[in-house]
Length: 197
Image 1 (cartoon, rainbow, N blue to C red):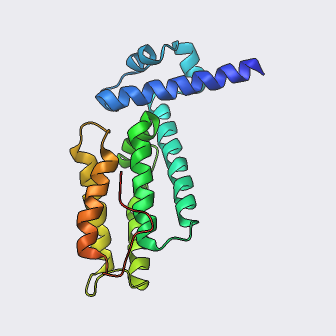
Image 2: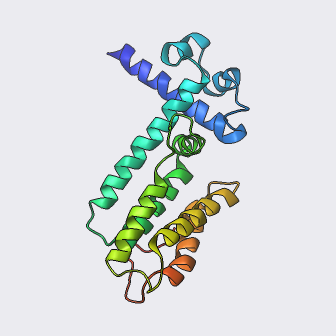
Image 3: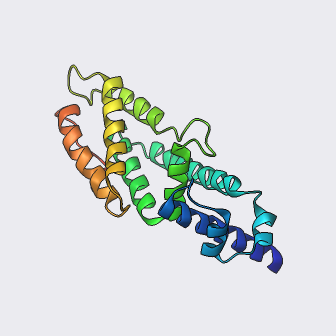
């Protein structure tokens, strides 16, 4: 049992070290030796868990996707209206990405289609929830749900891209929501999940 616990700790150290290295210099620039230096693991220990740098990247992307699926399930299960669900889900995701280098690295890898053949699915989530918001009468008259979903998604991706530092991502998302919802949401909509950082 202690050996199994030690193996889990080693695997976690490799994932964190690789995530930190990818976060600082990017996936392409990171080398196996730089990852090993950062996490303090021997090559032998590394190869016990992973075949190469790409296998670590795939594990990070899969972990991010599992975490994201869990967050989606929780937010979809809260019984909130569609816009509140979308605002709350994206806010929580932003806060987690700010704090957790493993998730942040997994997000970037998934967006690069490393370990995630079809990206992370955020665009589908936006499309679904904005369409449901339109069906629920939450959008202003004349707002095209598909168009609104694309603009909202692009605005949040842009808010993520403009900051070199992950700190403040949730605040940048909250700014986007305040501005964009003013033009998209119907007058009767009041967020159950306020767009705050």
